[in-house]
Length: 358
Image (cartoon, rainbow, N blue to C red; front, side, top):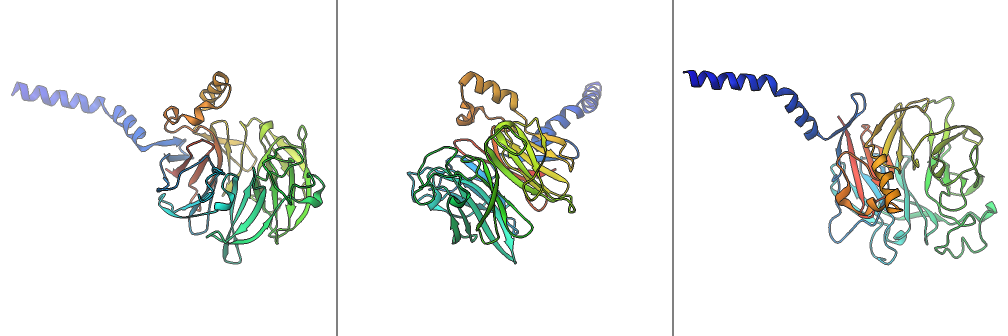
């Protein structure tokens, strides 16, 4: 009886002492990042490509009205039969692939519902140097090259695109769609101008160019029309190499600058929140006043220390050094209809993480 009682008392004491430990383990097992108001389960292995496909640096991600997720990677230009765009369902199941023509230059991708029909907009840089409107299976609706009428490009840039970099070259990165069906296009790796197109994909005007800010840029990589205030929509541009966002009205007139980001790469909006993936190892959520309310997966110090030590971004090529719940180089991110987030990272083996609202 005394032995049985002792075991009972030991078990009772353990039951009192253990809950904090169990809670800690349970939280870790749930794979949650963020805070109580903005907490997400993370899944770094959300989607994997089936054979014979392989990632060659994931770049951007977008979600269509049916909840299908489109991922574009830069790709290897020598693999001419390999697609650059892959489509998955919300559970990460592979659906289809297309876009072989853009292999080696795949960059920006956005989805638009136009009159009940869904279209894919794609921006390609490197040797491709083009923007394309496609169906969701890859059939081309229209395709445009460097807008020569802007006066900012080398004479042969549209007629004979080559893998040549410079401020007089066309290296488009991302789109922002306007209420009238037109769009802005960031030439983020080329001229540093923001080009405006009409709903038929015809060039209208441009603004910006290289400079120190307040209307000029150093790598205007991503952009978005922020319509959270319906009475005063604004264009937000990721002035990436300046580590800031620049705010404009929809005519391209400069309004203000928001600083202290780590190479902000692109933007999306859902409800009251703005999503800003930062190439320096974190994803930020901003409120209507563009104040940061939470950062997700922050691993900035370790990545910056690695950059200083390796004289580059060596960690992006060494998957064994990536940590659960931490980002390496978020290059793009987007919301789905339920407020879940997909993050595409600029890493050599490719990685797309799904953040599911907790």
